[in-house]
Amino acid sequence: MTLRVLVLSGQRTVQQLKEHTGYDVVFAEENMTIEQVMLADYPLQVDFGDWDEVTARVTATHADRPVDAVVTGVESLVPLAGRLRAELKLDHGITEQAARDCIDKAATHRLLADAGVPVPRNRTVAGTKEGAEAARELGLPVVVKPRDASSAAGLQYCDNVEDVERSVADILAAGRDTVLIEEYVTGPEFGVFASRVGGRTRVMWVVEGEVGPPPTFVKVGGVFPSRLDEARLAELEDLADRVLTAVGLDDWVAALQFTLTADGWRAGEVNPRVPGGQAVEMIRTTTGHEPSLIATEAALGRHPEPRAPKAPFGLYRSVVFESGGRIDYNAEAVGAFEGLESPLPPFVEFDVRPGDAVLPVQHARGGAFGRVVLAGESREQLERDYRRVMEQLAVRLADDAAADAAVDRPHTSCC
Image 1: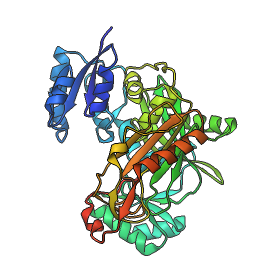
Image 2: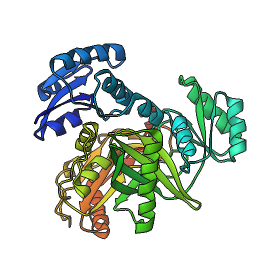
Image 3: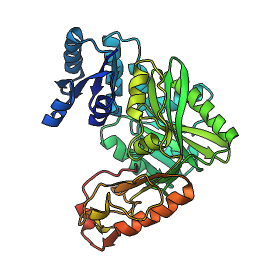
Image 4: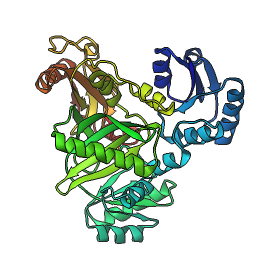
């Protein structure tokens, strides 16, 4: 039986669904290209700035071509997916309230704490003086972040009250009403991709992350499988289920973050979407799960079975720099690496071209400027292949005093 799925933005999801039988795709997008129009079964040009208009357009489409599920990989549109689920009276999918509670980090922490899930101590503040008082109460250093940010966007590490006040003022000046002040916890970080259907949680993937130093906390790398023993892994899977239960997420997927501190686990973000960046490629290769299909099936109320994984181990590294300048690398090497031990080709992607300016990993507009993802038979094999990849890419920086001004983008901590 063919099922009709409404995809709210995100061309990759549409591509994945079209590569598999059993789906018709209604693709709602802004400023659609000819390629996107041709890709979808039913293209639907909308203005995501006007949710009432989107709802009206989708409802009219649904009357002629009934939709079985609404999905999106764009976090800001997940509440809209919940609203449409209710409007179309669908049996499965996320609720708007659960989506908003996941996106609002203060609400997430409150719900988790009420359910007995350990989280970093935190306070919500509406002004600089209140922020300074919260920091003193929690104990410096602290982390200051927007309540609606994910993947450390807008996050600022502060080890003194003056920086706390400045960070709070910056976030409020950007249009937010309140700011989250959070206890700074340390320890290994673990990312979890989970699907919850009918009240049953399945953990699909656990990656052990490598996070850079403050103040930017860039995700500089990760390894799969994690090096957790069976007892710790069981604790983490149980905790993931408790987290998703607490925020009311069901018939949907989530990318979760946890820190293993000296005092035990602390739950961090609950992002109601598939992981971004390098994670999608690594999940596909090392688990046999295609994240976009997992998300679609969850919105249909089903847990699909994975295909056989291509390799048991995965490794990723972000392209980051200790200093700024203009990047140069061998672009011809991408896709044509030689002498690698793993038969699976690496996934290599740069966000910049040779000659573009880059900034240090600690810079407010720095972060990751690319990524390398490998899969193979052992962690040691992948480390050797990674060194060969980097040798053939021959990445280097030319000093340039004007490089700082040449980079016009917000900081991204995601690899």
